[in-house]
Amino acid sequence: MVLACSYPVANANPCVLLRSGLLLPMELPVSVPTVRYFAPAISDPDAALAGLDREVRWNRTMRARATASFGRPYNYSGQSYPAVAMPPTVRSICDEVASYAGHDFNNCLCNLYDTGLNTMGFHRDSYEELEPSSWIAIVSIGAPRPLVFRGRDRALRASYTLEHGSLLLMDRATQDAWEHAVPRDPRAGRRISLTFRQFAVAS
Ligand SMILES: O=C(O)CCC(=O)C(=O)O
Image (tube, rainbow, N blue to C red; front, side):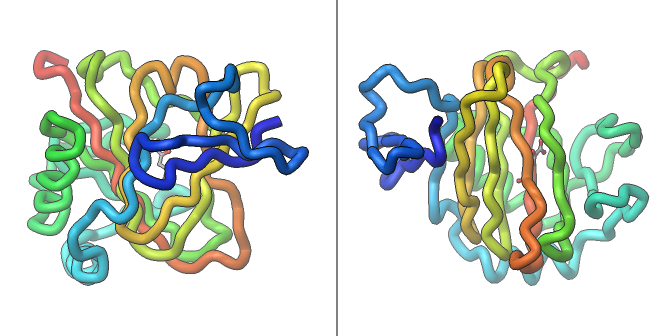
């Protein structure tokens, strides 16, 4: 069973840690999610946190965590979020992420995890309305939290600790083969994630 994957430098020498303690290079036939992890990625994550705290008004309808959506309208988890222009901090993070992804994004869903008791359950992100070759980008600000992936057969697991100022890119193949979640972690502190998506223009 895969316990963790690590990308010490983005895309370089990725390896997986097996329960036996063996660290295997990725060239061996072990299945891991097709993600790219960059840490650090955001130039000033402390300033980003202060900016988000000033500029974001949180929707607290959901029990698991607070949310906010910017950019084009978005229907998410039973909620309809109207079009709202990206505030300056979100816009500037979006521009930084675009330089990693190689394309712009037209929606950002922000999640506020006040404590480690706030979670996101296992799910797959839909590409139905997204540009098929676009990335889904997760920026993390604040306390580190693991993002756990589980394969369709539920046997394979992989986990990435998302650090303050990090960026994780997922593609369509990731969503086809894996579910992901942010599990409960009572020791974790406050965290904000920003998930950027590129919706197809006509959608
Ligand atoms: O908060 C996170 O890092 C997870 C975000 C996520 O899974 C999503 O927006 O689909």
